Amino acid sequence: MKAKKEWKVGLFLAVSLVVAAALVINFSKGTNPFTETTLLHLKTKNVDGLKRNSVVLMAGVPVGSISAIHLDTDTGIVTLDAKIKAQYQISADAKFFIETAGFLGDKYIGVIPGDNKLPALKNGDEVICQESFDLVRAARSATDLMDELKTVASQITNIVNRIDSKLLDEQTLTNLAAGLSNLREISSEASATIAGVNQLILTNTPPINAAIENVVTFSEQLKDAGGDMQNLVATNSVVIDESLANIKATTESLRNLAAAAERGEGLAGKLFSDQELAQNFSVLSSNLVDVSTKLNKGGLWGILWKDKPKKPDDEKPKNLRSPAGHNRR
Image (cartoon, rainbow, N blue to C red; front, side):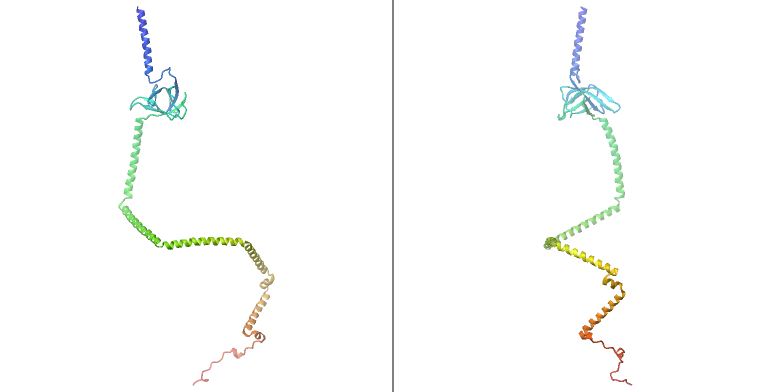
């Protein structure tokens, strides 16, 4: 009787343990050993309190759990082994984040699905997991930022004080006011000048238009003249080439003649180098001048007749006499 009772108690305990285990597996956050899963390696810099068996949620639905956490002390990278239920296919463009349930709740892995344009993640794939928002770290960063802002504000205050004391003194403000007044006067004069120029243009619009038309006409005529000149040159190119060749030949001849004269060759050379010939040529030139003078004065007879010799008295100056023919006493 006692043995039968003990057997019943043992059977009851075994059934209770099985039921309890089933309840635990059914209501647990993770997966059970009988569930087919896909192992993903999530890489992050800070797990921020995430623990083993933390749930993985996608669109608020549990799709897996964290089975292990590994820290690489050399790189400081934390690897999270996430077991995802095989029935959930997560594309490679999905985003993984460490999230918090509530303001101070438990940590979990949140999955944001992508556009499903990439293939699904396979067993053993590595995925980048973004860190969660750390309020303490954010407050610390805000404190550092406030300190920097205080420093910048202090520097700005110093700059403003310096500008106020150095640049915005009474003399500077007076000069600035005078400069603005001068600028206003200059702008007024410029406006008046522009108005006068505008009025001048409006008044002389017909002459200006006529002048512009004349310039256009002159440019057209000049263009036509250029075309005519080009045609003339093209038509008389042979004559122009011959003229240039003749000028070149004449220049060469003159150069040779000058060189021969310098060497004493020819009549010009003899004239330059022989003094006697040069003197005879000078006498001949003088005689030719005399002959031409006689021809002009007396014609042919002026050449045939010799000049009368001059009397000696003619060379002396005559004495001046008084009008009465004698001197008065």
